[in-house]
Amino acid sequence: MPDLLLADIGSTFTKVCRVDAENSRLIATAASPTTVSTDVMDGLERACRGVGADLEGSDHMRLLACSSAAGGLRIAAVGLVPSLTAKAAEMAALGAGAKVVGVFPFLLTHDDMSRLERLAPDLILLSGGTDGGDTEHIVANAQTLAGAFTHIPLVVAGNRAAHDRLSTILRAWNGPVRMTANVMPELGRLDLEPARTCIRELFLERIVVAKGMGRVRVRADLLLPTPDSVMRSLSALRATWATTSGEEDCLLVVDVGGATTDVYSYGWGRPASPDIVYRGLPEPLEKRTVEADLGVRYTLASLVEQMDSEAVARDGGLTTAQLEQWVSTATGDTARLPASPVEQAADTVLAQAACHLAVTRHCGNLEEVWTPQGRVLIQQGKDLTEAAVVAGTGGPAAHDTPPGAVPRAAVRRPGDAGLLPRNPRIVIDRGYILWALGLLVAADLPGCATALAANHLVHA
Image 1 (cartoon, one colour):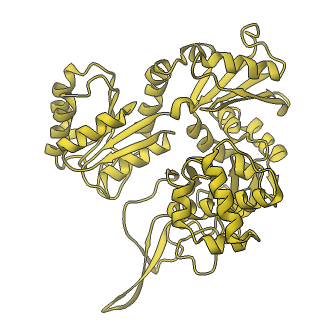
Image 2: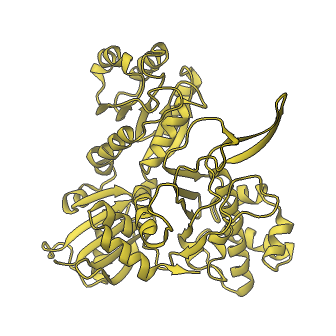
Image 3: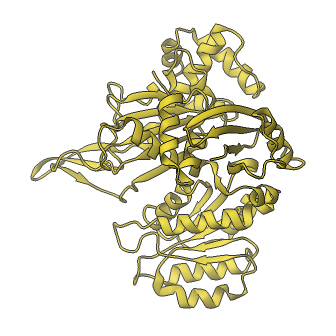
């Protein structure tokens, strides 16, 4: 079998891995600045030459690619009730690898439409109502959208009883329209995968072309949003390190970045005891959350506002003044890398703070409630206390000191209210290849992905 070329075309850098799939061996890796302003193929070809491949002259070599260039796939989710259908729509979008730029519950208002115009999403996901339930809200929102946004791709994933009326309203929609299964067909039950599939299809058909990636799509055998590929990599982690083959064995991946912190989990995270009552929207088996206010460069000021600076400095063996100095430096120069042990310690401890806050938001929590019948424990969200693995990926995790410090911040601490992992195996993606493992899984090469995970992800 010829070697494979795996590429991640990011907003800043394009990474390439050359893999001998037959022998499950990583041959070489290389990176080049992404040439978004000209043609992303220029940067991709340079990165391929870095692994000894001529992209245009290597027709025998398969190319599998993922991309988050130009900010990835930006979606606005329009739904009915904030805690139900609007939240389900957001889960579907995030699970497909998208960046949710806005969630609009209830009826769209004039202010909502103005905000939508400013956001300029790549795609709108329209939901609302359980099957056979309310149809008026989703129909009214479709009519409002049809008056202004017919050029934007649309996925309709709401009450199926409204499909006939929606088809009539959307007949004049200029952009592609996909009508699919309801993200919440009945109260308390989610069906996210049909909407995710439609989002991925539109990413391929429309979005990548609009961002100058048409040539990549033609050349690649497979093209996915990068977060979607990272989500798929969790199956390789499960095959390598999970303690059981069941869905109850949870795993977590944390990606701390300059602007956001992404958290991925696999597992239902159901209540650990029959005495615990679950409340709220059920959680999907595969979940992704994006914390747009927790980054270690572009959103560092927001992170600092939410953390205890004195405690964070103390955790890093720093004075508050040393931590504040690095915050000022990194905020003023977002491309700046740590140049001293003090700066490295500050950078790591800030990434730890972002990791802990993001995982706390991702996980569920337990609340003690007293009723006439006595004490009751109420769970909302996923219980990830028994997660078998926490993996850290991205720049801060790859270069933290000591190794494993950033993903280890996902572990539950005394006093934490959230259902965070208690005693997981800590794994570090030192070579930043989780995205590549996901591409191999998507290409039906799970054995190769599992072998690379075992050989190239470091157990801290």
